[in-house]
Amino acid sequence: MISIEAMMVCLDLSDIDEKLVAFARSICERLEVRKVYFVHNIKLYELGEDFREMLGDVDLSKEVEANIADIVAEQFTGACDHEILVSEEPNTEVILADLVKRYKVKLTLLGKKMSDKSTGSLGTKLLRILPCSVLVFPETASFNIQKVLVPIDFSDTSVHALRLSKSLSDQLGLQLEIMHVYRLPTQFFPLISEEKAVKKAEEVVRGKFADLQKRHQEIADVPYTLVRAANKSIAERIALQLEKGRHNLLVLGLKGNNPLPSLSLGSVPTEMYNTDINVPLWLVYSEDVIK
Picture 1: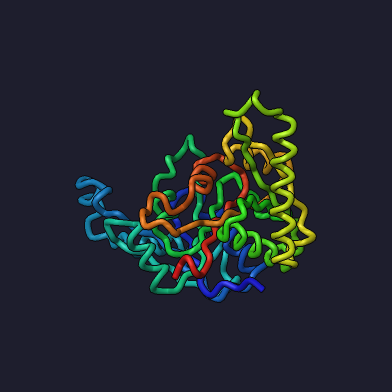
Picture 2: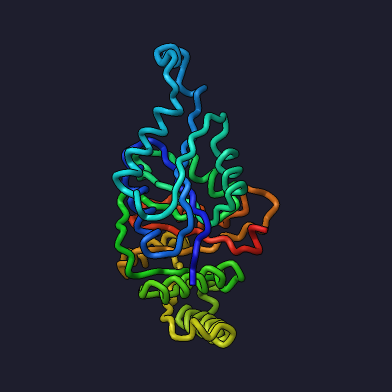
C-alpha cells in the first residue's frame, strides 16, 4: 500500500495554483497522506526598487500567506493536516530542497504551464535538486486518472517505477500498461534485412519481459507494448503512446546515480518534462537512490 508521510505543494501565485491545490486534495482523498506543506518563496530582489518602495511597511510574507490560505480554504480544507510555509530567500531551489529534508517530504507536487507561457527552467532545476519524487501537474491535465503508462528500459530505476505503478494501480483500481521503445542499428541496413532485424529485436525484448515477469510475479499479468523508435526520439514515442492509449498518468523512474546533477535525471525524463503533455508526470526516485 502506498502511503505518503509528507507531501510538498509548490505554489507560484499564478492561475495554476487553484488547480494544483485541488489536485493535492484529490491525491489525499485517494492515497494515505499524513501532512501537506503548501510552500512559496518570495524573491524580494526580483521585485525592483520602485515596487519595494511602493510596498512600504506592508508585510509581503503575511499577504502571500493570506492569499494561499484563501485558496487552501476553498480547494483543500478537510482533506488532511496541512501547513502553509512562505519564505524570503534568494535561491528558491535551495530553500525547497531544505524543506524536503527538514520535513522528510516524500513527494513534491509541481505545476507546469505550457511552453508558450513559461520556459519551465525553475521546474527543471527543481527536478535536479529535490531529494524526493516529483509529481508534475500540467495546467491542461485532468484529475480523473484511470489509465497509467510506464515506459521501461529494464534498468533497476524503471523496474522500481513499474512496481510502484503496479501497487498504485492495484490500490486505486487503475489500468496499467507497460511500454518499451527499442532502436535498430540502422547503419547495418541494407546489409541485413530490416524485417529480420525487427523480428530479432522484438524477440530479444520479449525474452527480457519474460525474465522480468519471472523475477516479479506481481507484474506478470500487466500488458506491454513494444514500439520501435524509428525516426523519433524515445520521448516522442512515449508522447504518441500517451495520446493513442488515452492514458491519464505517466510514470518514469529517475536514475540519480550520476555525480553530475545535470546528468542525474536521465535524458528521457528531462525531455518528457519539457514536452507539452496533457497528463500528470510522476518522476520516481527509489529510496535507495535518495539515501
